[in-house]
Amino acid sequence: MVDLSVRIGDLTLQNPVTPASGSFSWEYNDVIDLNRLGALVAKTICREFRWGNPTPRMAETEAGIIQSIGLPGKGIEYFMEHIVPEYARFKPPLVVSCSADNIEDFAALAEELSKSDDVAVVEANISCPTRNLTGQNFAMHEGYTRDCIQAMREKTKKPLWVKLSPNAGDMVSVAMAAEEAGADCLVIANTFLSLKIRTDNFRPALGNKFGGLVSPALKPIVLRMVYQVAKAVKIPIIGIGGVTCAEDVVEYMLAGASAVGIGYAAFRNPTALVTIIEDLEKWCDARGIKKVSELIGAVKDDDMELDTLVAASKGV
Image 1 (cartoon, helix red, strand yellow):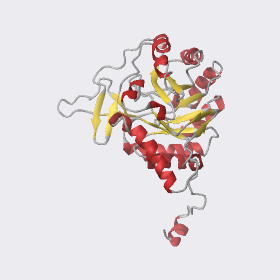
Image 2: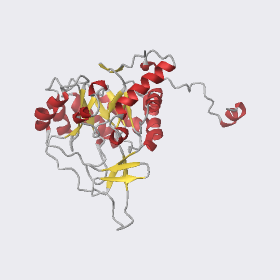
Image 3: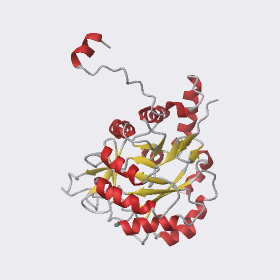
Image 4: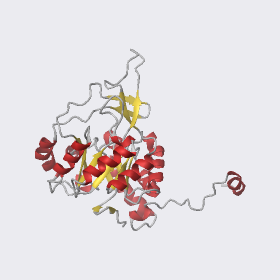
């Protein structure tokens, strides 16, 4: 039987399947056994109380949804007192995603989260596209990313994962800046800033105008980003975007990811998380793969001929 465990820095996950932040809660335990997951990832929290974005907050598209929730929550104190204990009942490590409007608050969140032994990982969500109307965030620029992650690194000794934005012009440079600043892992990627307009009243479908698109159709785009970043950094990567089956997990790992995050598929069907773990195990066993970690970065592309005329002469 295959060994599904993977290493993310100093942390070992029992398998590479995790939920994506914002699409998961401990209440999922009513439907699936949360102890089967590689990690538990809490919804992004902020220091302050937040109402979130105006409604409507979600709109359907032909191949997914656009959501603009806006990170509502009751603040860090409530989270530490009431939410962390709920997650602490389960065995997988707890990853706490956090976000802020300024570097000082990001650093303070890292420090406050570090006080709890039940928090295994601090995830810096520097990439949320729906906190304001412009979609701007720290992950859009390598300098802002470096400054923010460096400030957080100084305030915590816990593993620091950094969630990047697919809306950045040069994700590779941003990823390298995060690594240089002390990130232990890169999470690629957050949602794509999108817009839907209603044809019955000519108004934006979302109360915040813009939202983040989540869709299986995004997998090839994010897969390309994971592949490119994996070639440029030495720290682990978690791929998020369009994972709906075990083969998607394999693709991300071949491209260089050590694990994946699942959002849309779990939103559509909460049992998908466990089903994908079981199917991944079957996929590996059928091919005699002893350790799933052997798939990380194992894409066979070193011998590819990129000269058009030479490649054409060789055929497929």
